[in-house]
Amino acid sequence: MNGQILMTLVKMQFKKLIRTPANLFLSILFPVVLTAIFGLSFTPDTGMSISADPKVASGLISYAIIFLIMTVAMSFAEDREQGLLKRINTTPTTSTEFMGSHIISNMMIALVQVALVFGIALLFGFNPTGNAGSYILSIITIALFSLSSVGLGLITATIAKNPGAATGISFLFIMPQMFFGTFIPLNTTTEVIAVALPSFHATEALTSLFAGVINASVFINIAYIAGFSIVVVILGILLFKKYGNA
Image 1 (tube, rainbow, N blue to C red):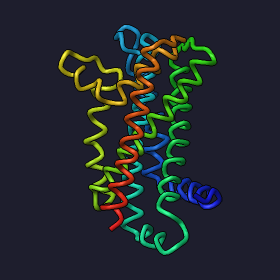
Image 2: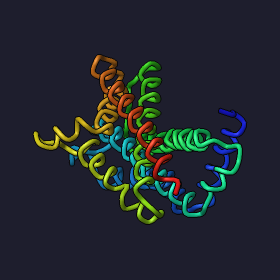
Image 3: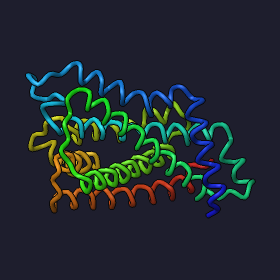
């Protein structure tokens, strides 16, 4: 893998994001707006405010990363529709470098999203009590979870034949994670679904880490996210290489 080509492609991905208002809104602004609306709408009296329940802030961070599925799927679908993938196949650039640029750029976007959501949450009374070790593990959790969203975005792009279809199909992966894997209360039925979702494990891990708790459960959650991410990214790359380039 050529590092110079890879970094050039990463820069290209960021330029494309800046020039596409819809993707920029979904990637950066939507999580910020959602956090602000949530902070204004819910108070400690409701029992589910950012200041009253640490899990809410963790869930909002997971919300932000989940939406990478849509932006990744739309981006790949646009590249295919505009013939960019076919043009890349005629250059020295490998498919590994091209997909690697998407993975790197979207993981960087996820960190920006989380930083913005975290900052807004602090303004609404979120009070994390973690230490240096817990914050390092939080960043690792966020990076791994964003990787799973990139993989699911690749799978979505394989199925979708245009950006519009990619938007709709991506919600098949987004909605379950939003409702069963963040801060929304679970019952005995939905909890069974939730434990299979990476967003559930990310939210659980972040909630503990922001409270300064580092225990076996945290590492089990991180290990699950890592395993899930590796599987879906490999599956996404293989499927897209075989069926998504046409």
